[in-house]
Image 1 (cartoon, helix red, strand yellow):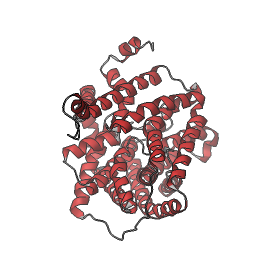
Image 2: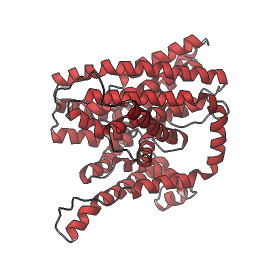
Image 3: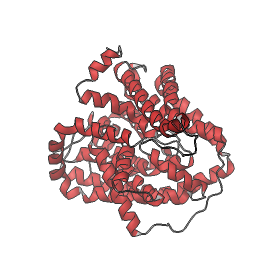
Image 4: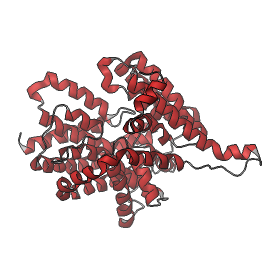
Length: 439
């Protein structure tokens, strides 16, 4: 297929994702799953190569534009969870537009890093993968241990001395550990005894992710009766070249870690990168998380095109690998060009779409938006996974509420994947599943 036509497919995917990314909780992977099933009926109208570039445009656009829903509608996915914290602060300070711009600039920086890797990717990445492959289990468990240990006891020092002060300091740690273990047990159940119909097995984890990450946040918005103040559209950002470079490099490091290692998401990668670079500035935080999120999502698919590597990381790459396997130097270069083109397009679209969302919130009360979001979430789960999916979502929502109520990190909900896959990589997953009566 001509290169120009493939780039048009990528642009088309970016425009489709631009609209879909504004729908709270609708993940682009779910849409990609339906498109993959539709290719069997479309046949020659959408060959595998066209689907590959459509996916590239969709994931690139989504990774930049889903920031808008994460900040203004507060329905983050596992990779945008950290953006919402300073993003909500900016929103309440009437600077939501600026938060979107800072995150988008970080995303453009992440795309620049991926593009700069192009001359070295086909020679460096396969060697790096060969070196690290035997060590993945202990590296993953090191990441898990660091994530849990960093949830260090903390308190206000205002509680009375004695048992109450001890509990004041340790409750967030206890909540974080409980969240991780309970989410991990739920992950074992879903991986070994799926409750959703076999016909939608590819959406097995959808109700759990929505319950863990999206529903608790929306419920918090509804109960807290948040008022969104009128937003200011700044003509400049409070960040210079030094902050942009530092934030981008830190975020790109976390994103590359997440794109290269199994199970590690952009949120976890960005968290580790933030600690490694000692980031405490909200501006740096937004920039770095924007870069981390884009590198994680886009890199996970782009590395699939690297000759000699064909790394399948992330849902989009796994789905594409079932119908497409071509990885040549020319295809990889064209894929990088598609990412750069659609990334720039998505950034400029984010400026106009953010203004559109602000106008919407000025006309519709935030509580009604939150109620509508909750309804959309439940309809998505019901339509895709049936009543059993709603049950899984309800259980996951109970687990996801623990960090909200007890002040621990919501990242611990990623125990859903980290615990069962970590134990499987260590060779004891089936043993634990047997103890749980799942075999």
